[in-house]
Image (cartoon, rainbow, N blue to C red; front, side, top):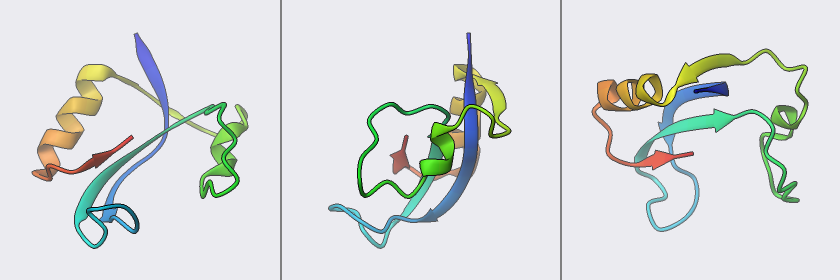
Length: 72
């Protein structure tokens, strides 16, 4: 099984109890929650170019960064 990933990157977490800490962000295509505060509304549209990754490939990317905090 593969997942459609809109973005994967390392950045500083901007909210929650770990705000200010480095985090690995994995953004999936097609979230159906439609939160008013969402900063990734472009991922709702299935016409956005996405990278297909397996769960193992996502895990490997996260491990390569050496960062323990992950936001999916």
